[in-house]
Image 1: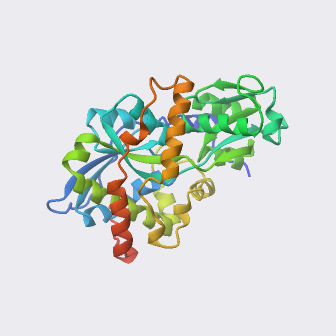
Image 2: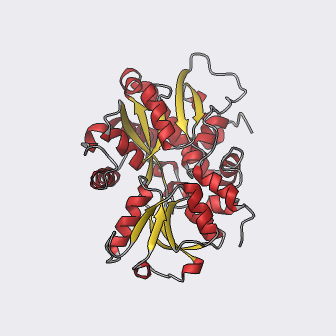
Image 3: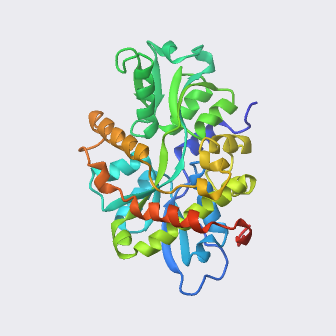
Length: 351
C-alpha cells in the first residue's frame, strides 16, 4: 500500500519540526489543591506520545492529586534543555538522550522506563539487498548520535561485517534521509519507529534488522526529585494508569495522537503497528504495566554510554547507575499492582 503523504511532508515529520510550544491545557476545573507538574514531551514517539495525550485529556492526573502541564517540544534535545533549565519538572527522553545528560553531568535523574520502541536497519527497494550480509561494500545512512545508530552498528557487527571497512555509515539529517529514501537515491539506512513502519508501509524499504530494546525514559529535574518525591511518585502512578488506559483503548489513543503536529499525517495502521512493538500496548491486565527500569535496560544504557564515548559522541564515560533512581518507580509498581486500577472510573475531560 502506498501512503498519500508527500516526501517533503514526511521529511518535515521525521525532522520533528513541531513548534516548541506548550500544548493548550484542557478546559476543565482543576482539583483544588492539586500539585502542579510540568512535563516535557514530543509527539513523534509511539506509546510515549499516546500516554501524554491520555494524561492531557482524562481525569487520571486530577485523580492522583495532580495538575499536569504537558509542554510539547520538538525532540529529546529540547526536552533536555527544558529539564536542565528548570522549565520542566520531568521529561520524556530516548535512552541515549538520557545517557547524554549523565555524561554532561546535568542536574537530572532518570527515574522510570515509560515506553519501548523499535529501531531498524532497512534497505531501499531499488538496492536489491535482502539481508545484512548484502550490505557489504555499501553505505548506510542515518542520523548519528541517536539510539538507532548504536543499534545499527551492533547489527552490522552481528552480521560479521566491520563498520568503516565492510560498510560505511554516513551522517544525514532526518529530512534529507526521508527525501533520499523516497527518491530511492540510497541503498540502506537506519531509523526508529514510527518511521521504520512508515517506510515499510509506503513500499520504500525492507527491514533487514530490528532492535526492540530501545526505550523512552522519564527523567526528572533533581530539585523536583529531592523536594517533591511524593508528587513524583503520584506522577509515575498516573503515567502507569495512562499507559494501561491507552493499551485498552488503542483506537482512541491513536486518534488523539493524530490531532497534533507533527503526527497528523501518520497513517493509523502505521501508528498501530509501530506501537505494538511495545508489549505494554497489548497488556492483558494492569499488573503487566511496569515503570521501574529493569536491570537489562540499565545494562543497555551502560552499553550506550561506552559506545557514545568510543564514537566521540559523549565527552566522558558516566557511571550510569549514579544517575538512575529505581526505588520510587519500583514502589509505584508494587503499590499500583496491589491496589489495582478501575478503567471504568476514568473520565474523558477533553475529546
